[in-house]
Image 1 (cartoon, rainbow, N blue to C red):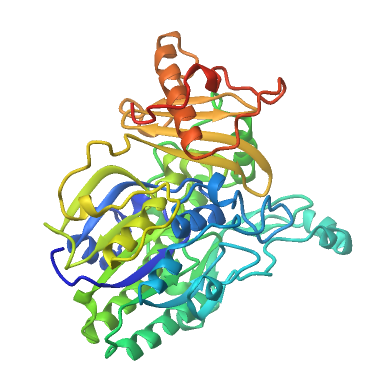
Image 2: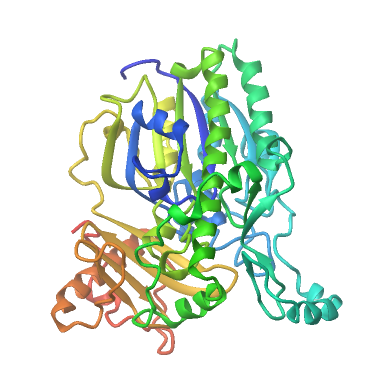
Length: 493
């Protein structure tokens, strides 16, 4: 081990941040993120096992796939498949606590509807999306407020607003009347900073998680950030005009919600999204400044990441969910650790996942491993030792629906992305020739061998992750090539 054997750990997790916005040279200004990237390792191909808050966060905490930890979709609403982690599932925080770490949690939880962070070893400073919370509208509201919804349908759509008959209009972007210091995210950051001040003379190692809700939609932010970027200077996403004709029909249904936006509104929405990202970076910077002022910066492993991405107009879509495009799945992940990173300022192109966080932190802390873990430690990449010979050559994602039930699975390799849809057409993209995923080549005869190989990888990942897609009943076994043809081996082949 290069430096201090027991580093402090700071995890700063954003919500719904597109990886491309955080990359070097992007016009969105993120000076604090750029700083830790220059002093650490940037992972260019990091993915969650599902682009949905609860499953992604649970996977980071447990090192397991949704099919293993049991959090299949968001748990704080009426559509939850499961409301708690499966019995016997452990989290990295419990192992850190056993190893003598003091744990502090401030911000968004959204991992279980039946537990809070304290029940997994954390001392709670501020908890958003805690157990028992309700997110979304309960069905009774539509009955009670029936006349209100009918009246709203007759109201003209405002700029930046989505008109949804019977569901209620919703504003996707705009300026908030709240000041920066009044935001709940700032409260989470402020409480974390106050605790860091108390820890500056501590001899015991600590781990702090600060989880903000930005830049999750709606992109409604203080005026300073709402007007920070000039919409006219922002280009439309290169795949914005994709008509989605060769893609699953559900994508087109989702796009219809955003269809009323003209090009100018799309640019305005992106400007607000970038402003939101910059605001989160400013909050992150306050945490970094506190660490530096307290003399803790070089004793601390700093991890910056997000739970999933954001389409931000890509393919005419926003938010995240059922579609498995890169904008919604690829996430920022940067690690700065003076005692453990060799040759800082590097980028790593290996496939990594949120499930790799738990084993990485436990190894860095010298703590015991989790009894079950689908992830692997990123230590070889931090030390610039190169990937192990058996490192994964693909990533696997499991979509079980968002607040509607749905089944799709994704395998992404260096060149290809394959998406299996249980109830719609499949997708195949050649990412070398078509990096923006405009042309679905699943039905080209010359791609038959590639499709077969990708099916083989999918089933191998499905076996390894104890997935739930093996039902052979005739009306649900819709995969063209079933698992019996492959036997579940060689997901890295």
